[in-house]
Length: 194
Image 1: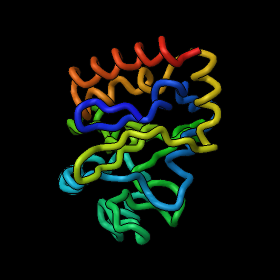
Image 2 (image 1 turned 90 degrees about the vertical axis):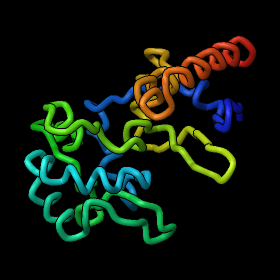
Image 3 (image 1 turned 90 degrees about the horizontal axis):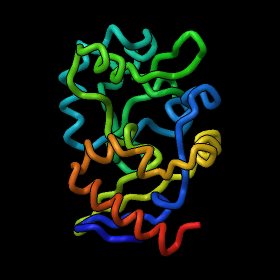
């Protein structure tokens, strides 16, 4: 782990390579799993407030799930805030394009200018998972078999995780943090990289 301010960063964020390959995985990360996407506490009110604006971008099944469960729910195992799911399958905010690839209804509304919030930060930051502790924040690389094609493409294109996630890292932590992270990554690469 490498420390920057109050953040502990897994070295895998520098060493692993990753580029989403939706033509291969079809967005399986939005469909697979036991619970919906993790949510920050401050995102709950946002989801409540934008629901009416994003409804036109969602599936009927997703709307039904959100109307029944609410715009957010909690993981029954650990009590963490998460997005609701449609019959324990896909995230309730997911839509599917004509090729069967998942898209985020929230992000589609954002791209159309209907809302000014892109999507939950945990989705935007994936495959980095953030864990908040009382005295520090941990940023870890999450390896998941549904993302194996993203790892293959990342290796082909030689894009480390932190570079692939530049935009969401800046969104979450700011330009200054990302600049320091990039400098640390370059130093790490000189010392430990291939």
